[in-house]
Amino acid sequence: MAGRTIRILGIDPGLRRTGWGVIDVDGNRLIYVACGSVATHDKAELAARLVQIHDGLVRVIDEFQPGEAAVEATFVNKDAGATLKLGQARGVALLIPARAGISVAEYAPNLVKKTIVGAGHAEKEQIRVMLRVLLPKADPQSHDAADALAIAVCHAHHRQSVVLRVAAQ
Image (cartoon, rainbow, N blue to C red):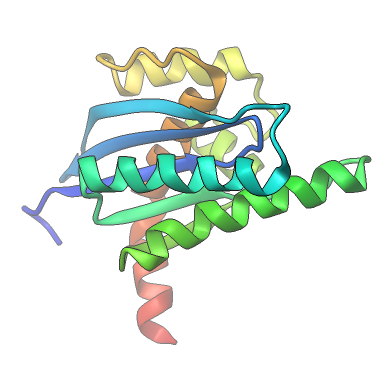
């Protein structure tokens, strides 16, 4: 894998906004490519919102042609209905890269935070500060886009162990 640039798509699934971030990994260098979010209309039916997420992620993959993808794992909150809806958005976020033939890794929110900041319970602003250090050209306009970049960076740091684990199966 040395000497070959790998493009990684990080996805932070959400029903209101699904964040996405694209980085290139060249050896030990992390290079910012792009980031943004797919927003849905909060008054639209659930199925229509899932289509909006689908279509937005398809456009991102078509434009940036990532070789690998990483999606944040769902955390369970107190509102079971919200957790189920988030799970459906996450399902779309897993499906789109997989349908494009891209391997998809999943990372727990605490592992993403620990990888970026060094602590598993970091605040969003701490993540943004570290992203400015790791990816100086990045200027995410939303927390969702920043979180997606953090997920991509997390995958860049852990991808070798994921590749080895998949090869062992």
